[in-house]
Image 1: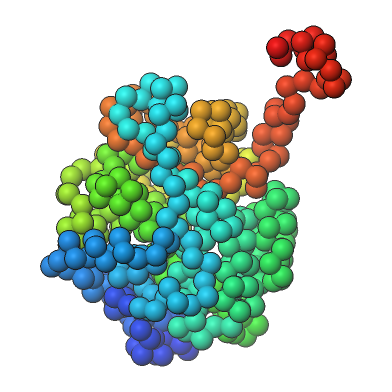
Image 2 (image 1 turned 90 degrees about the horizontal axis):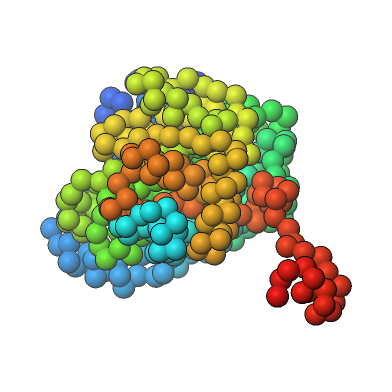
Length: 431
C-alpha cells in the first residue's frame, strides 16, 4: 500500500531526474520497468526494484584508467553508480576505498595456504560499511527533493544517516530498537538529528517506518532503506569494485559476507558480474558464502534445509547489527550461494567473541560483532572442508569493535594490576 501511494504521487517526476548511467528501475521478479523515482516495489507483482543501467562498454582499458584517476573514495566508480556526474564536488561524507589487508598471520593460524584478505570497512567515516549505502541514498534524496533523511536501523545505519545528513545540510530522523549497544546509540545521536528508540525488535522498527512512509507525517522524507532502497543498495557494489581493483583487477575465488537484510551480499554479486561484463576483470568462477549468527539465522536455516522460503525468526544474539529476523533479500542470498557453489553458515555467540579476539590478536583489527560472525563462519567453513584453503579468499569486516565493546568487555582487561615498581612487575610474571 505504501509503495503504491509513493509511486502514484512522485514517480512521475522521476523521468526528468539525471542519475548518471541509471536509466530506470527494474523489478527483480517480473522485469517490469519504471521511471527513476522514490519507489521500491513493483506495482505489478510487488517484487523489489533495483537500478537498471546503460553502462559504459567497449573500452575497458579506458574505463579502468578513468577509475584509477578518480578520488580515493567510492566516487571513483561514479560511471557505474546512480549518481550525477558532479557527485564528487558536492558535500558528502565520501566513504570508501578502505583497506584490503593481506592477513598472513591469520592465514597461518587458520591453515590457509592461499591468499587471505580482510576487507576492513571500519575505516569509513562513521566506522561501518553503511556509509557507502547512505552516501548513495543522499544523492537520490537530493535528486527527488527530499528534506529529511530517515531510516530504520540496528545502529550503524542510524549513525551513517545522521552524519551524512549533517554534512549535506538535511534534517535527519532515525529509528532504532530500544536495546541497542550504547556505543551505537551515542554515535547515532551525536550528529544532532532526531533519534527515536522503538520498543521492540528491528522488525518492529521497520514495520513502523513502513507505516510512516505512507502517512502525511512522512511527506518529504527519504527513508534510505525503504523508498530510496534501490539507490541505497547500490552502494554495496562498491565493495566488489574495490576488492577487485585492490587485488590488481582480479576476482577473488571466495568471499565471506555477513547477512543482515542480505542486500550487501546480493549487491556485491551484482558488482562482480558488472565488472566481468565490462571486461574490467577476467571472467572466472567465484564462490560467495553468507555468514549469520546462530541466534538470528533464518537464511542459514533455510540453506541447510534445502528450502527456498526464508522463515522469520526472533533475534537473540550479541550480533545486533545482523539481528534482522525477516531479511528482505534472504531468498536472493540463497539463489546466489547455490548458483556460485557457496554456502550459508552460522556461529554462536561464543564463537563470535573468539573470532573477534583472533582477528585482533593476529592482524591488529578490532572488528565489531558482525565481523566476528564473518570470521567465525570462515573458520567453521574451513574446519568443515567447505572453504578451500588454497584459494584467494576475502572476508568482510563491516564495522569497528569500539561500537560493540559489551561483547568482549567481560573477557578483555588488564593482564595484571601491579604497584609501580620493577619488583611488582617481576612478581606478576611479566619479566
